[in-house]
Length: 368
Image (cartoon, rainbow, N blue to C red):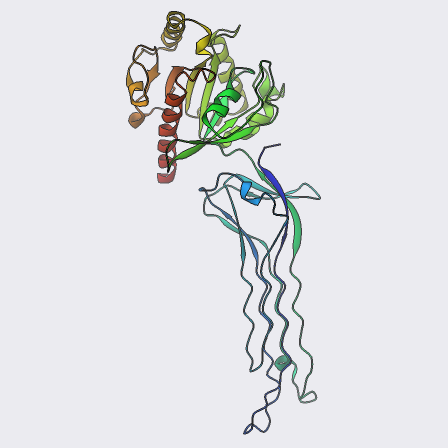
């Protein structure tokens, strides 16, 4: 069900035909057959590249084919092998048989290369068929045909940041504000029925992928609502942003405890993933009320208001908590910050703070 998928027909190259040729030179009395072999057809190879984040570059492509092998020539010249077709995909891509629905490959590791379809073997030239009883063979093998298969490439969530929250807490509004994604936005629950990926640009050379996921409800880890589909796939995200609605009938503590519980019930590993907390819909109340609610929630979690958020343009009078990303502790939230995507309150600060932590998480992963 994940958003970025495309259907393709992939074909490896046909082997080149062997040559029928005879050596004819003035001073060579018995030249005989000298037809060379055909070249092998090109393979279809999948290559995983972490610098590719989507499958959008395959849009509009219906059939991708490796190069055919070149036919053999005279003087025992072998034909050139066909060029391999290298299909570059992002980590997290599954190759699924279009007919049976079987998962043929699950490509996760950056730099990984896997041969999907082998090219056809080149045909033998007539030089291979000479014998004492057949000194002038006029036969050479045709090249073998390549393989062809219809597949669906499906990108299962590989986002750097996954948005976690109850329905209608502002996840879609935030990803629409920060990225190029255009999810449906409305003032009712479950407007997001399928995940949406958006690329968030922090500067000319840095970006990260954010995922807007269907809202979680109590019991999602047991299959209730749409949250189970989210929980199955969000294990591939590097970092989580809990979005708690200040204006919701549930208290901030109730929302936070319920979301953490669903993650823990589904996966112990997922429950230990690094995270931050955004207190959404900050424009729904006065500045004094906002600071009071924020301070109470910070106190409840055992944190004090600090000014480390100045690094990301946070007004020091806003009650917020930030860790120093240099000494980041994944057991604690990286930040707790009131935001409003609709009114652009602290949205740039969230973008740059998430960009900083994603950069650190990537660096830590590359060293391990």
